[in-house]
Length: 67
Image (cartoon, rainbow, N blue to C red; front, side, top):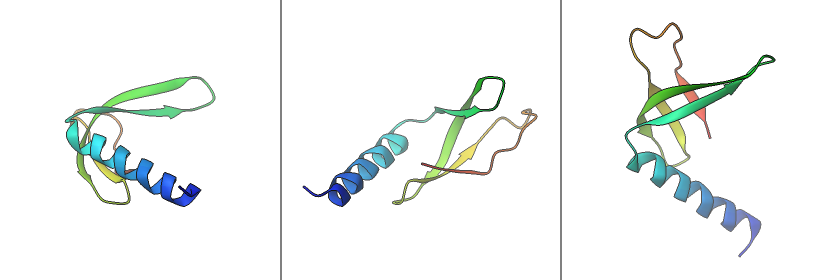
C-alpha cells in the first residue's frame, strides 16, 4: 500500500472508533502542563472533523477540533 492509502485507512479507522465511543478525552498542552477534558463527540464526519460537547457548567467552550 502507498503512504496515502495507509493514511486514509488510518483516518477511516480513527473516525469509526470516535463514532463508536460515547465519550473521549480532549488533551491540550500549554507551557505549564497537559490538561485533559472529558468530552462527548456530537458528530464525526468522514474527514475525522469532530464536533464535541462539554458540560454547560464548564468554564471553557470548545467548538471544534481536528484530528
